[in-house]
Image 1 (tube, rainbow, N blue to C red):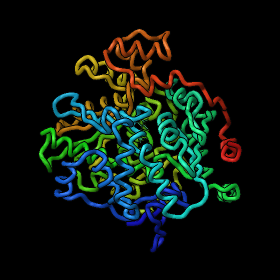
Image 2 (tube, rainbow, N blue to C red):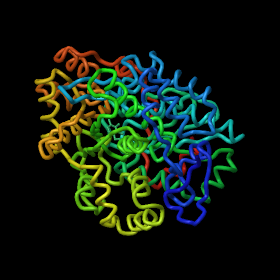
Image 3 (cartoon, helix red, strand yellow):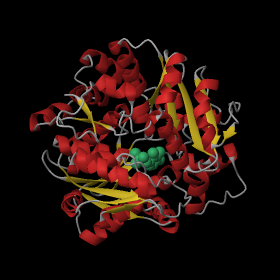
Image 4 (cartoon, rainbow, N blue to C red):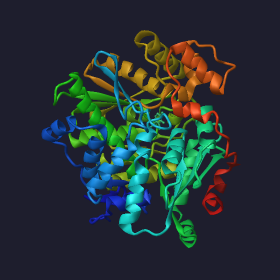
Amino acid sequence: MKYISTRDHAAQPRKVTAAEAILKGLCDDGGLFVPDQIPKLTHGDVERLIGMTYPQRAAYVLSLFLPDYDPTLLEGDCHTAYAHERFPGGAAPLYPIEDGFYSLELWHGPTCAFKDMALQLMPRLLSAALKMTGEGETAYILVATSGDTGKAALEGYRDVDGVKIAVFYPNDGVSPMQKRQMCTQEGNNTYVCAVRGNFDDAQTGVKKIFADAALAKKAHEHGFFFSSANSINWGRLVPQIVYYVSAYCDLIVRGAIRSGDEINVCVPTGNFGNIFAAYLAREMGIPIAHLVCASNRNNVLTDFIATGTYDRTRTFHKTMSPSMDILISSNLERLLYMLGGAKITAELMDSLARTGSYTLPAEFLAELREIFSGYYCTEEETAAAIRDTYENAHYLIDPHTAVGLGAVRKYRAETGDNRVMVLASTASPYKFAADVCRSIGVNADDLDGESLLTALSHATGTEIPAPLAATLHKPVRFTDVIDPAEMADVPFSH
Ligand SMILES: *Cc1c(COP(=O)(O)O)cnc(C)c1O
C-alpha cells in the first residue's frame, strides 16, 4: 500500500510510503495524503481483535495501514503510548448512557481530550519514519490549534529527539483551561504563541508556510524541514480509526450487539478528522450503518450534508465548544476524494480557495447522504444536553460531547433509527468547567482556576482529572501574541 495526493489526477499518480506521508504531512500540490487502497477487516479479523487489549488492537489496525513499519516496533509503541499510566481511565472505554446508547470516552489521556489518542502515538510514528528514511534534519512541527490539538501535540512531542514544535492558537478563541495548559507547557523544544484572529486564520497561516517553496528552502539552510501534527497529517488519522474498531469489539464483548450487527456512530465535528476516521473504519468493513456529523452554531457541515454546497463565507461564531469553531473542515477533502476521485477534488478545492464555496455533484451527494447525516445544536441546546444528561443519567459531559448528544437525539427523533449508537466523547467536562457549571446550575460565575474545578467536583461528586489539577500550579512560560503575517518568522526565531 502506498499514499497519494487527494488532488493528483495524473494517469500515474505520484506514490509515497506511509513513512514519507507522515514526515511530509501535506502533499506538494496542496492535497492531503490518502492510502491508494483501504485494507479490509474480515469477520475472522474482528473475532481475533475481540480477544486483544487496546494496544494490541491498535498495533493490528496500524500495521494494515503502515506496511513499511516494523510490526514488532509498532506493537511496542502502542503499548507505551496507551499504557495505564498515560490513560489511567482506560484508552477508549465505553460508558452506557442508556440502553442502546454508549459514550466512547476518548479523554482519559494526559491532556484530557481525544487528541491524545493520536498524539501520544504519532511522535513515535514520526521518529520511526525519520529513522527509516535516514532523514538527518530536524522536523519542525507547526500546529494551528482550536485548543485541544495544541496541548496534546506539545505533550506528545516535548523533548522528542530530532523534533521541534511551535503551536499557534487563536487569541481569545480557546477556553481559559486550554490556554493555561498550553502556556505552561514544559520541554526544551516547545514554543507557543497566540495569533490575532480565529482558528481559520491560524490554520491558513500554517498551511501557507507549508506551501511556500522559498520558506522550505530557507528551512533546509537552517537544518530543518516543516512537518504537521494537525489532522491533515495521516499519522494523526490512522490511530483514530482504531477506537471505532475497538468500540465495535467491546460492544460484542458486553453483549450489546452480536458480531455482524450494524451500529451507528455520532461524532462532534470540527476539522472532520475524527468522523473521517469513523468512516474509514466503516470502509474497512466494520458494520457502521450511519454516521451522524454533529456541529455547533458554525454549522457549515450541516448545510453541506443537507444541500451539497459548502460555503464558508458566513459569520464565524464563538461557542462553548471552541474546538468545533471551524469554517474550513480540512479533512472533508479526503471524503471528497473517496467519493469522487482526485479530479473532482482538485476542482472543488480550487473553487473553495477562489470563491469560498463549492457544490458537490448530485451523484456524489446522494452517496454521501446514504452514509452521513448532519445536525447542529445551538448554545441553548448544548447547555440543555449537558443538564438533561446529568439529571437523567447522572453522567457529566463536556460541551463538545453535548453537541453530539443533542445531534443523536435529533437524528433518532427524525429517523426512528434506534440501532445501537456510539457517541464519540471528545473531552473531559473539566476542560470546560465554567460552561459545564453554568449548564447544570452550579453557581461558579466568580470562580476560576482551582476553585472552579473544585466547585464542579463538589457539586457533582466527580473527580478532577490529575493532569488538569497539576496544570494549575505550573508557571506560565509563553505570553507572545502575534499577527498572522508574523507566523512564518517563528520557526527561524524560536
Ligand atoms: C478537536 C476536537 C473536536 C473536533 O474534532 P475534528 O477531528 O477536528 O472533527 C471535537 N471535540 C473536541 C473536544 C476536540 O478537541
